[in-house]
Length: 314
Image 1: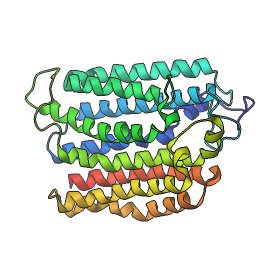
Image 2 (image 1 turned 45 degrees about the vertical axis):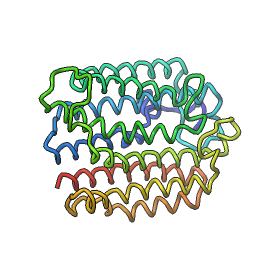
Image 3 (image 1 turned 135 degrees about the horizontal axis):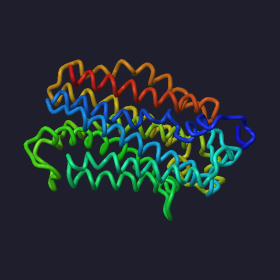
Image 4 (image 1 turned 135 degrees about the vertical axis):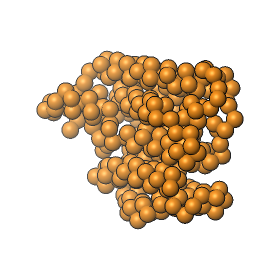
């Protein structure tokens, strides 16, 4: 499915471009950050909901930007084994995908105005930098994903920043501070929030690792120097395993060092599923196997995040 002749509805075409299978990367940090907020008695529903909407819009905007820029830069070709890219396949005109990118990022900024009114200057800075990096992942004069910086970007912004930001906007919403704070109020940034962000950061980045392992050969031909291209298959697989190991060590810290109850170990229930997905990553490089493994890693992120949030709350 790589030509404009594919019979596909307009709605399905835009769903392909938005890549809803990647939305666990937007939902997971909000789930974990909100679970921690409930545990700390600072849960605020409206900031939590808008944090998710903003994160989802940034994720979708990033997906649109990737679809557009990878096509016009020649990184997406008919030899690519990944999911259909609508720009490269000629299903949606490039200028329409570019416009959708701009509109989606603009909506993310609009959504963020309420969060800025609650969280003040810190949220304004985080939001603008997140939108900029979402565009710069494949766009601009120095696209992050083309220079091996995609993995660190996802780890920081879809993991650490997203979880801590979700906790922060809820904590500051119930804190005795005025609107538009210019500094970070005490108790709104915590060590627990940082450590809780690490599993989300790890598994979210693992999704990118699978994507880049699958596309490694075509990325080499296109001159796209992803981290998988730089590291090779062996060390990219080691990166995947290390990222999952980080996720599964974290609940032990909460139990043994942070004084949480044993229910925080609930994410360990997902270990068998993680092992099945990992086995595919360690043995295959073809899209036939890695496309399901990519979706499997996304499902793992969702399952882990729900279990972790429930464990923290309980």
